[in-house]
Image (cartoon, rainbow, N blue to C red):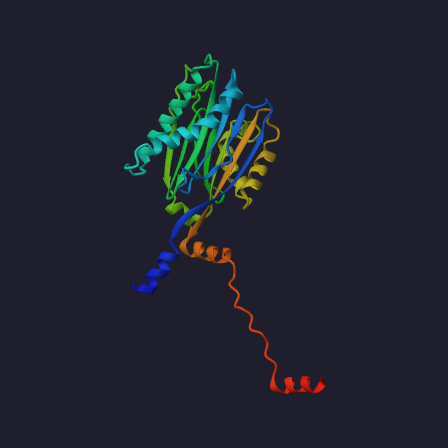
Length: 289
């Protein structure tokens, strides 16, 4: 490969991921479900962090609100506590576990454990994607309209959840899913969907078809907010609170970045050169006077 081919190849490699985020909340019980708007520059490093939090039982709204406000900071602190450590999958997983446990213990200080908060989070540090969850809030990864991954609820055969934050009788440890984005980006547009259990309650189809149906709905729109709105519209029959976050990943190559930079820079105009009258014109004007 000569130098020119090498430069062309390097310019076509993905160097950054941008994020189109759509969030919608339909809250029927005054503050039970929460979602952030997705931090597109998490920790000032171009990473993405977002989450959906669903309170259950006693003091549900206050607990979900606390998790919403404090979990991102706890995760960031754990993740960056030792700057010498490489950002490995093991570090991300342990940081999620520590953050979930810290918040859960903090909640227990002012609740009597009659409730709990479900949580599902997405963390993207290109080229890696992570989804953590505890409880029955859900996360989906799809490429175009194809379902790639879906979380499994922490519920028993009776439908009772056995993991939650802020409940003394429930384990707070999250499951953490990890995948590389390299191959997935070659297949098409990646979307991550986080949502509360109320979404599935509004889907009048058999359970095994629900997650694939969600992938199909959100892929019908390029705009992430439109995807979130369509999913809400599809599940309007639900009587439960509903919250959904759709994240569309937008890969950027070095060539894309340089083009955007050129577009954003103001055009430099050449200074205007005063028009010079010809000799005949000057003589004519002088003769007229």
